[in-house]
Length: 250
Image (cartoon, rainbow, N blue to C red; front, top):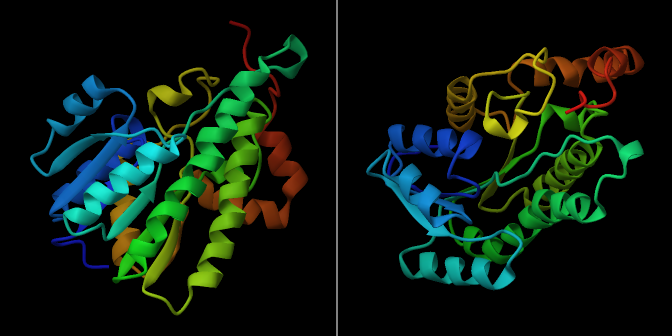
C-alpha cells in the first residue's frame, strides 16, 4: 500500500502500540492519522507529538460514539485505513475469584470493539481502495495461561480476521492482521518481567514494512516463532511459555 496522502484511524491510539503505529504512519507520509481513546487529556498529549495526528474521543464499546465518529470522518472524505488496536490485558488467577465484570469488560473491548468498528466503518471502506488492520497477538497461536481471557479474545480476532479476508477477497478492502509478541508497554507491566519484550518502535517499523509488502499477516519476533512451533510441537511450546501458569502474587 502507498501510505503517502492517506487518512488512517487508529483505535486505542493515546499510548502504547497504538500511538507508535500512528506515529510511524505519520512519519511514512499519511496525510492525517486520527487516534481514538476515552481520555481526552491523554489523547491531546499524544496528538501533540506529531502535526499529522488528530485526537478523537471515542469508546469502542459505545455504538453511538463510533457512528458519530464515522459520520464526522465521512464528512471530511472518509478513511483509507482502519486499525483496530484498542484493547485491555488482564492477568489473573481464576482460583482467587477474579471479578466477572472485569473479564466481561475485556471481552467487550478486545472482541466486541473491533466487531463494532468493522460493522460501522466497512461500508465506507468498500467505496475505495482501503486497508483494514486487526491487531491481535502471537498469543492467538499459543495462549498465555496468566491471561486466559486476553488470549482467547486474540484467538477470536485471528479467526475472525481470516474469515473477513476470505469474504472481502476481490473487493477494494485489503484485510491485514498485526500479531505482536509481548511489547514493552504499560499494558503488560503486570506480566512476569522474565518475558522478553519487543520495543514498540520495532513493532511499528515491522508494521509499516508489512503495509508496503504483500503479506497480510505480520508476525514479528516471537509471534513468528509461536506460529511455527504451534504446528511442530504445540505441547512443548505451551509448556515453555506457561512455566508459571498463574501471575506472580502481588
